[in-house]
View 1 (cartoon, rainbow, N blue to C red):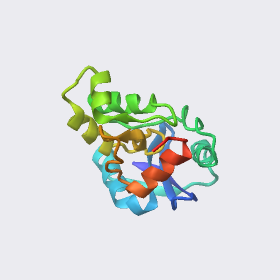
View 2 (tube, rainbow, N blue to C red):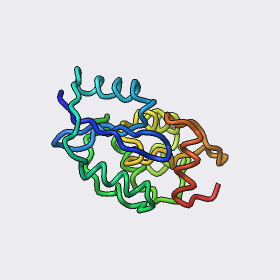
View 3 (cartoon, helix red, strand yellow):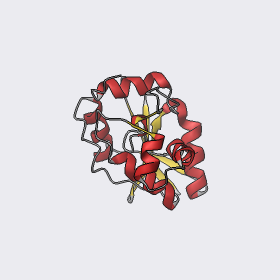
View 4 (cartoon, one colour):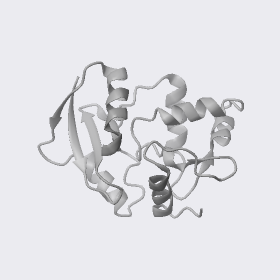
Length: 166
């Protein structure tokens, strides 16, 4: 699979965006590149990257989000190719408005699977398009900032950027 790879500057460090004509396949922090590539290879097999000729609409949307336009990523085309359950979880994450959070259990209950909070957590951890599918908006039932592939400091920054009261 041949993907276009872009690097976006951010206050949180460089962000990588991988896409093809069908949409954004990966969006992650540059220091998480190994994880990003492993998720891409699990979905597509061998992946080759080519540099972008010009910033894509998706890259401009990421920049707009980071500049304070919190809904900038709402309509970006994605190609996530998860399992049916993962896709349901990721759709639920996209429905969480900026400035709000949900617990794993709340998402599981909303999906009609009240005992599936661990499965929600696993799907959250396999999210290939951070920021666009805002997995940073998921917190522990006690309000704690539980794990985030990009690190808890970034999660805190993202939530504060969105106006979440921590």
